Amino acid sequence: MNTPSALAIADLSFAYGGKKALAEVSFEIRSGECTLLLGPNGAGKSTLFSLITRLYDTRAGRIELCGFDIKRDTRKALAKLGVVFQQTTLDMDLSVLQNLRYHTALHGIGRKLAMQRIQQELERLGMYDRRFEKIRQLNGGHRRRVEIARALLHKPALLLLDEPTVGLDVPSRLGIVEYVHQLVKEENLAVLWASHLIDEIYPDDHLIVLHKGQIKANGTVDDVLKSTQTAQIKDAFYSLTQGEHA
Amino acid sequence: MSVLHYWRALWGIVGRELWRFVTQRERFISALVRPLVWLFVFAAGFRAALGLAISPPYETYILYEVYITPGLIGMIQLFNGMQSSLSMVYDREMGSMRILMVCPLPRWFLLLSKLLAGTGVSVLQVYVFLGIAWFYDIHAPWQGYLWVLPALVLSGLMLGALGLLLSSFIKQLENFAGVMNFVIFPMFFMSTALYPLWKMKESSAFLASLAHYNPFSQAVELIRFALYAQYNPYAFIYTLVAFLVFMAAAIVGYNPSKGMMMKKGGA
Image (tube, rainbow over all chains, first blue to last red; front, side, top):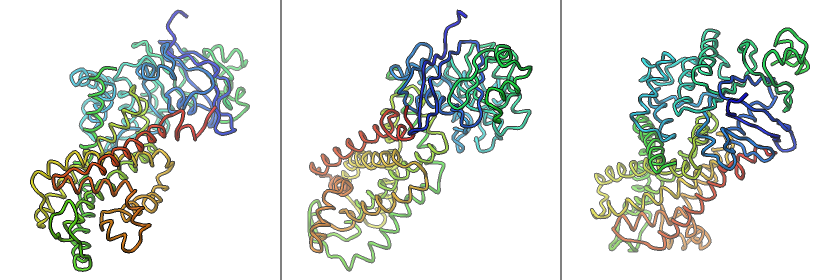
């Protein structure tokens, strides 16, 4: 475990008014690791993502991205982060290319380099031929691919995916799962993937099970199976979340 | 973060807004129709009813259409500022605002860039309106068309910052209707856009003093004087201070540790 830590979270707590959403959450994600964040609805996954992306303020606990404190070194930390939100965040009236150019501008990437990277990412996802189409004309799976491409344009060290396959058909879903796992291997990227779909887990993935704002399990697939004395992740998940559906 | 990074981001945000404006013809047309209806219908009707004495910056008796033109310019910018904030509430609800908020630049800069983009759009709308007004025999000295540019930028920034501030408080798009009733209409009607202060004083001194302190009035006066190549220092300082106050409050509103983000939750 000598690989650098892409994300380190320590004693993180958060509450909406008096209602606790996260309670002393701590974990680390390293480069070249794909970590699935599993939890039923209301487990605190989206809150955790909002804190990591600094949409919410961290008041109790600490979040570090590649060694940069999200609160003190916000901009350096955010520069290391690529995000795909659960809800589509593309501009429907702009083309694929315009959406990606907008993102590269926000990250200060010059035109020439931006066009190279856009071509590279879109070609990898089989979307380069559709770069002039408006987002509105694309189906859900293709929009997701564009969002993943966008999240990678500034070469982040950590990719956050907040349930990116929700609402997609099976081939699109499997395509995205496969592509992200390939990225982890080839680019040495760290990925934190919030999901409630157990079939998106690969055997060598890292798992974090979040339930009612607390971490119930944290380890490799084998570790989680052993600790819960179950044979399948589905059973492990049910035993950790006391039978609640994901 | 280099200066080049800031420049690229600024140009990205402004360029996106301009592109959207150019391609959304309905938005462009509706932004122009409103003040033109006021100019062609309302002002024509009121021309006979309202007598206007000579008052600066005018050096002679003027038609009512001439008087309300700066007010209608202010109207374009007021509605544009509110429309920008409406789009920010929409972007926040739809999620696209998040992409802006998670980019590695200070929030004040991102908000200011959005503001500049909205102001740029409103200035374009104003010049098109002035062009149409020219054919309706509403002429200002040619220097006025240049002098008015900085005034338009400042008033556009002030009204846009007010819109930003409002958008930081509005949680849902549905609540925006209240802004129309409680902000836009009182601000517009309780100002010097449609009638001069002295005229208002004749009917109500209280309303006249409210209109005097209304930042929209001062923005309109700034534009009115600039359009006649004159400088109104009081209106300039008032509008500038109002812009700084609204902008500072909007930045606090969008600060995750202080503003509306924190109202949603806290550890």
